[in-house]
Length: 241
Image (cartoon, rainbow, N blue to C red; front, side, top):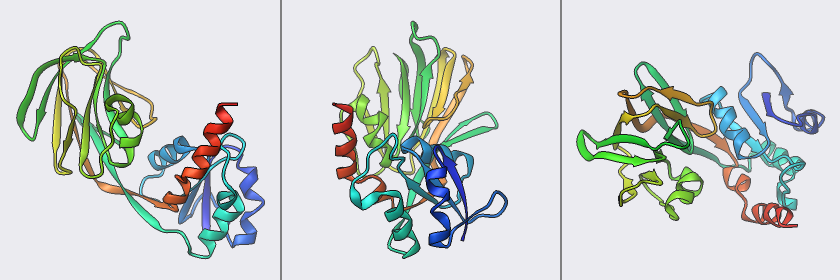
């Protein structure tokens, strides 16, 4: 199989490819092997959307348990032992521009010493005529364990989550159906539109942004193993030393 490598410290993988009947190619490939952490997977999907990904953690920056070393991951893929997961994605639409994310899409304040003032409508119905805060964002179930959780102190299992960051008014975070369409209007800005770990897009005051679930999905091999709890415990233990 022809594959493309993405991420850092790729020489750690290149030497192993022939042993698993994998050939690196820059022109034609059926798989992207992402070497790194969560950010490497997010970045690879942004750069090469729709192409299946095999994420492998970089041992130089993220310790792994014995079951999920590079060789083990490549062997499991070659032996067809890994499950293919279809991860929902989100779209953020402004004018004719569209950005996509696996975890979340947030509209943030650009000026750190000033709040963003914005209006929120859900499925065409006004939810809040004016909110002041650092931002607002929509999250997938997968992303609910990331930034969404740090804001809301909660996660969810179905639908999409709408979170308000540091709002000056008491307002509830929402878990909405997957069909929900969230429209935001910047009353005082500008704002920054961010999908996962992507470069930001500046949105001027007075503009509108639409957040919604995308039709496309991210295809990821061995996601459960990549998110292994034991690997995570090892990384946290290393960070605490």
